[in-house]
Length: 252
Image 1 (tube, rainbow, N blue to C red):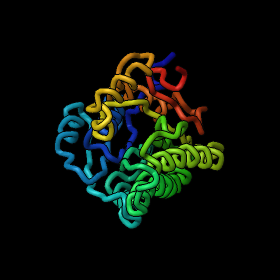
Image 2: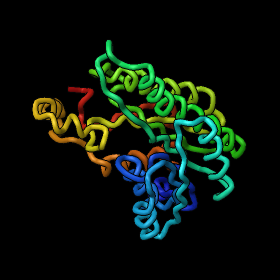
Image 3: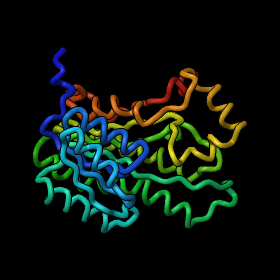
Image 4: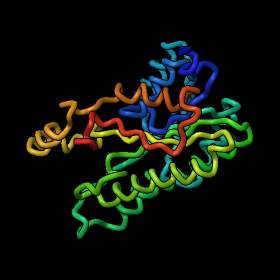
């Protein structure tokens, strides 16, 4: 099999939430495979810019609060203006707010749904329009184990990640025959800012690790390969799929 199937040389990837965590890991993986990167988010991207450029790839950082509808539209417009095209979109930005369901505020509900679900649809729609005109593109949404399960004390996050899975399948049905593949990666329990509270809880941490056949939390490094696969020509006949990267959690 030719390694060219997995090559991203000449491709431009827009990655949201690229400054740290899983987004940074995926952006680095795409750059290592040859892609130039446009990173978007509200955090400083000086670190990821330096790392991407050290790989010999270009990096454009765009500050954008993706909880705002107008900011999402402006992000795609600016990315296209700066780069001329977007070959790969990674919808990674997200947030989590924890509280018992009976105490969960509507303010928290709306904030989580807006960033985790509405932004995924709008950015996919805005970018997808451009990809459809070219007749080719890859969209990778970031789902979750809670796209399949209910979770505890995270009702909005669970609802939003179920929505990500549904959006992925719906867009795939419309666009797969027009050259745009839409898939999702569902990370398992990963070492990120969002899971720090769980990892600091000794009981929960012990239970979670005992429940993962691989015996460890995942890392950003673990998402590099799946992201490259779904962004590359190697996955041209894969669409509407939710790829679990979970150390075996779902099967245990």
